[in-house]
Amino acid sequence: DGGITQSPKYLFRKEGQNVTLSCEQNLNHDAMYWYRQDPGQGLRLIYYSQIVNDFQKGDIAEGYSVSREKKESFPLTVTSAQKNPTAFYLCASRQREWQPQHFGDGTRLSIL
Amino acid sequence: KQEVTQIPAALSVPEGENLVLNCSFTDSAIYNLQWFRQDPGKGLTSLLLIQSSQREQTSGRLNASLDKSSGRSTLYIAASQPGDSATYLCAVLRGSQGNLIFGKGTKLSVKP
Image 1 (cartoon, helix red, strand yellow):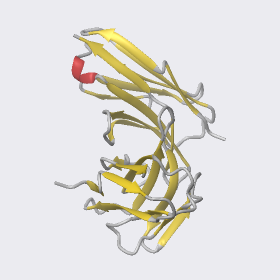
Image 2 (cartoon, each protein chain N blue to C red):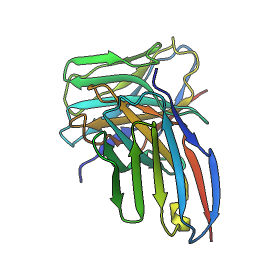
Image 3 (cartoon, each protein chain N blue to C red):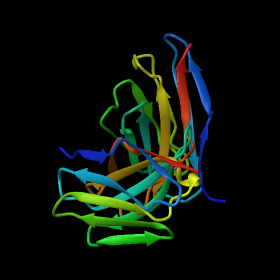
Image 4 (tube, each protein chain N blue to C red):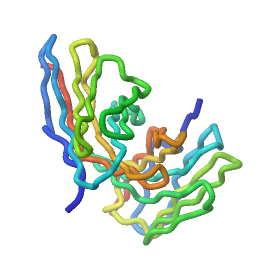
């Protein structure tokens, strides 16, 4: 079945540590997105990529980095510069702008 | 700046009732509007997508309408069931790059 796979489901970060969240899709979608969800808030866009080897900052990119070396993969690194990383992270993809975005099941990141 | 508001924040209804969830947006220049469902600790499931040129979309017991001029969308759920209990999110598409702006959601509880 086609879909978006996020791993791990739960992740714990120590002080000063960088962690990487994985997002893989087999939908052959061009565009991929990373969102952050905090309790009581809507989703906020971190980074997005319209095509391989190209990506743009979203509304809250500080403290995060991404890469898009393959069409099917869009990993997100939460760096030590992100001082409040505890949140639910969601990856999404879509084919064309008039088509719906499809989401993975998310990764919950917590601080040790 | 586009802002999306969902009212009410929470709603509790008895099983079998028809209900309406509301979504409003401040900038009518949208490409489309998408309604999602989110179960606790899970990702988002796309329910309906309405293009800016459309007035409504239907899927089973769900009907979504769009009035761009007034900046409003509604999600109508007919004959609600306990399995409909979830948080419902609406999001508008800003720009051709496909970036969604989300509301904070309406948490629906359908009591047996």
